[in-house]
Length: 73
Image (cartoon, rainbow, N blue to C red; front, side, top):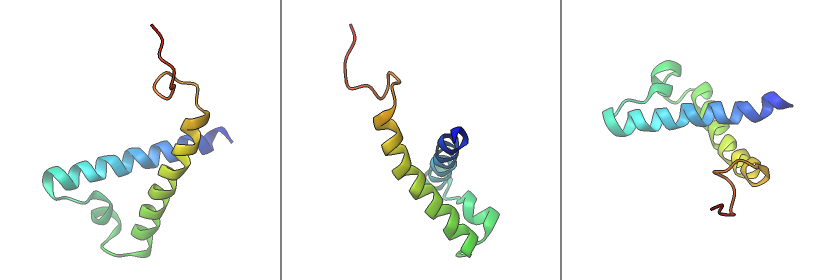
């Protein structure tokens, strides 16, 4: 179950880096590696989107300082 919390984070990092490359260099790493419009490419994008949704729920349960709504002084 612990690995399940790391997979969404890894996919979000991949998605974030991919969008950074698209914005900076107009280079889509996912389509370069997996092909334009392939089923595998679509699956990766779907998994990245689901990872974002899962991360929202994980963050609400998280006790880390960056997710905390209380301020400490």
